[in-house]
Length: 499
Ligand code: SF4
Image 1 (tube, rainbow, N blue to C red):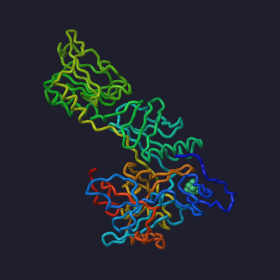
Image 2 (image 1 turned 135 degrees about the horizontal axis):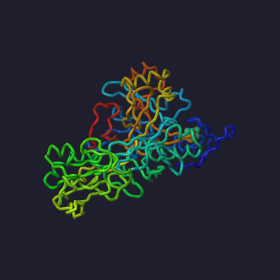
Image 3 (image 1 turned 180 degrees about the vertical axis):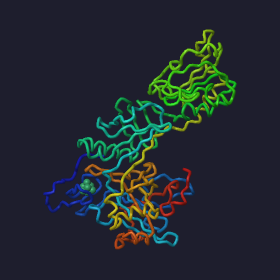
Image 4 (image 1 turned 30 degrees about the horizontal axis):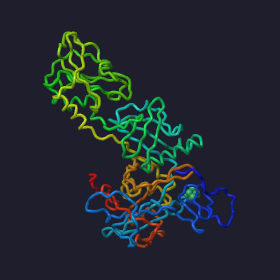
C-alpha cells in the first residue's frame, strides 16, 4: 500500500477544480486526475469516481462443476441476470456518515422470491486478523508481542492442535499507539487480507513469514508438514504397526510426549515394560508434559539430541538389545537405538522394516499452511446504511433472515451482541480489501434477505433498484462464482468439498 498521500486534505482548500470526497472521515480534496489518500477514489474530469471496478459474481461462469479461481474477467456487455448474478461490495464504494443509504441496494428475483442485497465497503476501525500457522515449532511465548517493521501489531495467543496462533491488529494497535504503529498495523493487515506475505518477528521468539494459503517460513526454513497429532495420539495411531518390530517408541512432543510401553495402547497390545525413564512431568500412563523447553527442534522442543530427555534405563526391566525408536510428531526427526550390555542406547541405522512406519507418520501429516481470517465488527453505524432502525438488522442476522457475506464469501457471525464476523481471506476475490488513512481497513460486506423482510426491518426501500438496471460498463467486472463458496442466494445448497 502506498503511504504517499496524493490529495490535499486541508479543509480550508477551496479551489474550484478540486472536489471533495466524502466517503470517509478524511474528507480529501482531490485535484483533477489525482486520487485521494486511500487510492480508492479519484477526480475524473470533475467527477468523483471509485477507481477499482465494481465486482459482480456470475454463477454461469463457473464451469462444469469445477472450481474456477477468481480472476479479473472482462465485462461481456450482457444484461445482468437476476438469479445468476450477485452484486458484491468490492469496488462498490463507501458512504460516510453512515446514515446515508449504502451505495448499492439491489433487488433480484430468485426462484420466484424477491430478494435484496445491500452492499457497502465498510470502514473497520475495529478489525484484525487471526492467523493460524501449522507448525509444532515454538514461535514465541503466549502473549509475546508480534512486530512488523519493528512496530507492535499483535500478540501470540493460545496455540491450537498442531498450530500456533497469532492475533493481529485490533483497535488498540490501529488507534491506541503511535501514528507509525497504526499505519504499520494497517499495512500488515491489508497485506495479509489481500493474500500477500508479511514478515513478522516475535519477542523472545522467531521471525516468521506468513501468507494466506501458503506454507509458513520459520526462521528462514519452509515448514512442510503439520504434525499428525500430539505424541500420545501418535502412539495411539501407530502402536499396532510397531508391535513386534520394536520394544519401545518415544514420540517427542513439546506438549504431550508419548511412550509406547506405558501408554494404554501398548498395554492393550501386551507390550512389556522396558525400564525407560523419562524426564518431564508424568501426566497419565505413557503421557509426559514438559520433557524439555519449547523450541524449534524435535517436536517443537528445543532439543537436538533426543536422548537428552531420557534418564538411565531401569536395570530390573531393561535388557541388552532392546530396540528403541525415537520420533517426532511429523516424522521429520527420527533415530533408532539398541541398548548395549551396559543398557546404554547406541544409535544404529533405521532398519528397513521400520522405515515404513516413519514414512507412514509423514504420509499422515497434512501440508503446513498459514491461514488468515479477517475479523471485523459490522454491528456499529454501518448498519444505518442498511436500515433506519439498526438493531433490527442485527436481530435479522441473528434470526438467519439476513445472510452476511464478505465479497460473496461465507462468513461466521459470532453469537452474542453486534455483527462480529470472520472470513477466510482466501475465499474472497483478490484485492478485495482496502484501507483509509484514519487508519482503518476497508472490507466488503453484503447483506442479503427477502425484500419483504427488508421492508419489515425499515430498509431504505426508495433506494432499491433491480440488478438488471445496473448498466454494463468498464466500471463493473464479472468474476466467476467459486463453487466451493455457497451461492449467497441459496447458502443451504453449499458444496462441502473444495472440488
Ligand atoms: S481517504 Fe479515500 S475514502 Fe477517505 S476521503 Fe480520501 S479518497 Fe475518500
